[in-house]
Length: 259
Image (tube, rainbow, N blue to C red):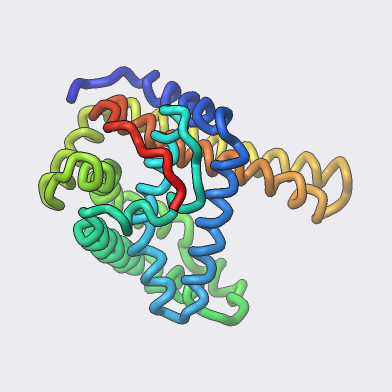
């Protein structure tokens, strides 16, 4: 694992778009199916929300395998959603998901120290939030503090799923290698994160504001931004694969079969 220049982070973003551009329809269909599957899971109160968090690193292998298929000029089938569940390492991937849930809960718990649990109440409450309570809280500071606490866990999780699934690493070893791989490529990951914040958050926000000013409509910007947001999301998922192969190399070719 070698140290990488900061510009590598921007190259990963471009590679994500390049992978998406090769099979946009198939990758978009896969993402939409994944999105609706997560929505359906989340309908179940409490258990559904917990399951969503557990399955995030599990479903990460879906887009890793899809990107590998694209690179090998193979089809991207909806059955790739079950990639992790068909893997011999599925139990280890589910254990990784449990650790992901635990880390998220710890980050929320740490953030609650800043605002006395206001953010957690807003996220879990079914009613309308109290504007006065929001103004008195420090939600932005809470989110930033929670994210800061979560960063070490995110570093350990970043490559853990593909290291488990593709290199058959045990869970502790995968977390160890992932953490130090991200640490050594820290400058590249910093630019990578800033790039996606600009493209995935700031750009859609600016586009929506401009469209709202020009059209005077609240619905037209939403209609236009929806396909843009989906495309950016899919490209971002594809760029995860680019970060992996840069450091750990390209895995064995995928098999072009439809289950």
